[in-house]
Length: 412
Ligand code: DSN
Image 1 (cartoon, rainbow, N blue to C red):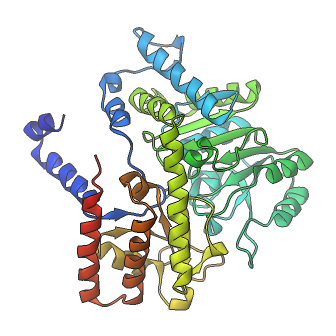
Image 2 (tube, rainbow, N blue to C red):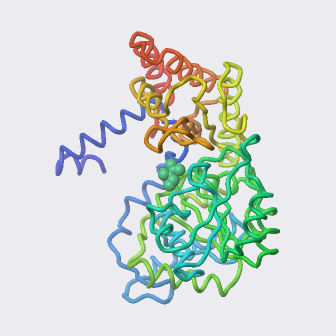
Image 3 (cartoon, protein in one colour):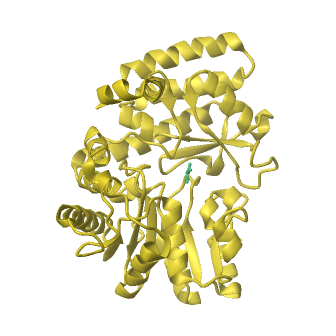
């Protein structure tokens, strides 16, 4: 495939090649990234992108959909099976559009929604004032307990009881602990609210039964398919009741989107088949083990982790006592080919741009094949850079070691 590109567009071809090499000479520790299988990539790069297919299987606007329909039906069936859902919509182009569709289906502008504070683990599309969600709906927030840095269910219940939100959102983009959907479910029942789980980050762990499932506690579940789930880029919406599922289908099309990305849907179907295999479960177990090794080594070396550790695929380092910003650490690590993202920590005193934390995740390096032994090395690379933040010689040495390690585990 790449040979066609080389002939047609050398510039783009070279940039793709360089990006490929960057992955083989570095370690991607960004918690939301992952590498799909070549099978998923083949589906995504296939002829399927040629077609418009507005509508749903058996109810399309254009002819010639017999194979497209079968692919989408398989994706739907697999999504329902993997996540024990009654209904699935596999068409959202992204996680943000999946969330948008749920709001459009269940809410009216101005309705109250209770979600996790963005700077304590929540997501932009969970009510940030600079996002459509925060401008159209009345978002109110719960946070984490100051001491445990874990979700404070007393606070969730208290706010929910006094404000009676139409929707409660359980889900986060930088939270290293298990989310107790049953507790959220109880609260939502008490207050007559809809409950939505956004499992974008943990979808792979849920699929492998290594994190509690959001059903039967939630009415609706959204996710992206390209993070821990290791599928093509896109979103997915699951629901429990027919009435809600029908509203969501209408919200996606014709409400918000036009033609679905059938190539990405095929990639989702392939990933959902892979998610039912034992080696996927083994991979997810390793993702968690690797994150725990990182957490242990950081704690042994005197680092503060938000909530003290991890139950999932990520850790959040609190840099406050080191007097460093997340931005400074992210940039120093990048110079040694170690990729992380700066992240706010609960009750952060620095801005979103600077932050007092960095988020480190294990999905990519685990897909590459790194295990506990190598994760100890990875932790020591990060620690050496942070502890010698301005030392160019140490950075040069670490970079050499990173390249050596990464090259032992090439991506496909
Ligand atoms: N950008 C994703 C993340 O890094 O968590 C969320 O959309």
